[in-house]
Length: 484
Ligand code: NAD
Picture (cartoon, rainbow, N blue to C red):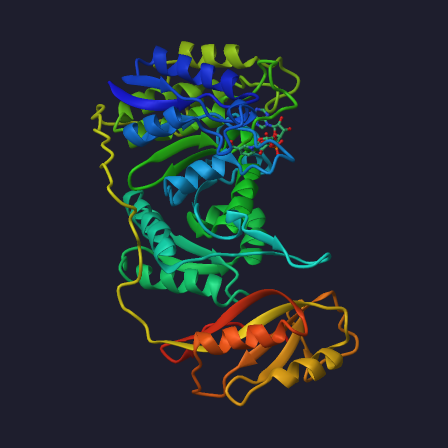
């Protein structure tokens, strides 16, 4: 028996989890469940991170969590438990597979275009951290954190997975033409790792171009690897290509702990009615069985699912509306009835089960991942964000008084567009400006110079934030203002 943690979730979670576990039971999957408490009612009890200490301890001991969707209470200032779980346990790769399912009609299946896509979404970083601040009454900012070692972990996983599945193509999706430093780091990391896998075709595409091509020629893609937010959006697009969220499974892969869950949420509009489609959670469970070496059990269930779908059997959210839909429990029973039957298309064959032993190492301290080659770092200046409704020239007249030879004011921008020393009267301003003080070429400054400048600027302006300007190995690693 392999011991795993199970959290039933909120909304439709308990209904679809019950259906899936009934299928596992009928298939005699050698799993032993430890039910843990996470989600809405844990928040309601006042536990701010959405999981009980016992749940955390069980998951950290067993290493596998199979979970139903969980609600993030609105307006309580708490973070999503789904995101907290992925980030706390460093499940750095979110793998989502999307394939044409015979019996689930889409424009592509009707046109005879098969879809078989795997999206590997970075799972820890990006704006998904929800690290946000309001700087002024009118201006809010969000931090987009992309790291080299974090990118390396997810991209290496994508290549290893692509190699295993003999993928036709691995594509890095990005917006590095605009976000040159963050997406640029992700893309450069992809190119570096791609060179280690010469046997695999690898390329890259800008995310907007990908979206257009995805709805015109989805069959030309195979494995996609993306940063967190773009991956979130693109994977829902992919779900739409194969019939909707009811068919989108996901696996959150980490080195120690893995979480298997459906892509969809708690579907509050249909919760408690026993009409939800359990397929996405079942497909996530099948991915978990594969992960645990239970490939024969996985194939038995998947073949029965595919056969059931081929028969036109459906829940209310998909399929032929002229035929009656089954409820969640009836749909699960049909799959069980169809054990041993082979679908006409996509039948799975598998070697006998070889259960793996999941062991989570006991850690004494946190693992720190960092680049091995130290860079030469030079402090070149600072961007000061200020709250002001003065005109740019008026701000410059004050700020220039604080300029020094070592650290002069070189420009002022508003919403990222330069408005001083040159700019356009047609640029519309808001109440937050950025003043850039930058050392002349090859000049280096100290932290103390920035602190001194902060102190003097603060006598004249309300400073809302400061970013230091860095050079790494002589290269400026900060963006220019638009029009600079
Ligand atoms: P949702 O995915 O719950 O629902 C979107 C639509 O899809 C609804 O019309 C719903 O009825 C339908 N739907 C979803 N799953 C279905 C299924 N299995 N069968 C049939 N129809 C299904 O998205 P939402 O309404 O934006 O979010 C509701 C809650 O879920 C929110 O609290 C959100 O934070 C949470 N959520 C959790 C997860 C997760 O646990 N990983 C993911 C997304 C959203």
